[in-house]
Length: 137
Ligand code: NI
Image (cartoon, rainbow, N blue to C red; front, side):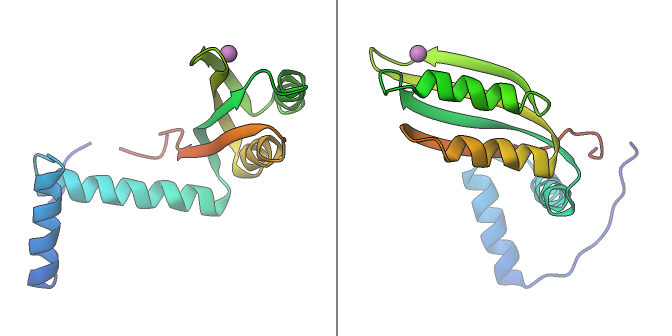
């Protein structure tokens, strides 16, 4: 993709604060920081519109909890069309970290998250709402 230059007029204080923040984050250029913000906004728009999206559900649970493994497997089989991969990590003697990669229409992906969050016995469930990347440069 060719680069396009454009000028933007903003409040000086806002730009100063933005520059301080991106320096603190180690961002190399203002252009990269603005591009990252635009892409983040476009990803949010994909989710709002109900486009095809991709992401990861992160869960932590104690595998000793009654029936938890069977219930997790059941939900993942019920939602197999939206789940592309599952990774299970044994964190310690009791705790497991499970990462479920999801892809599909927003409604199907959110259904996976809703079903997982409804399970009793999970210590943590969160969604990293990503993108398929197809509509982003
Ligand atoms: Ni485990």
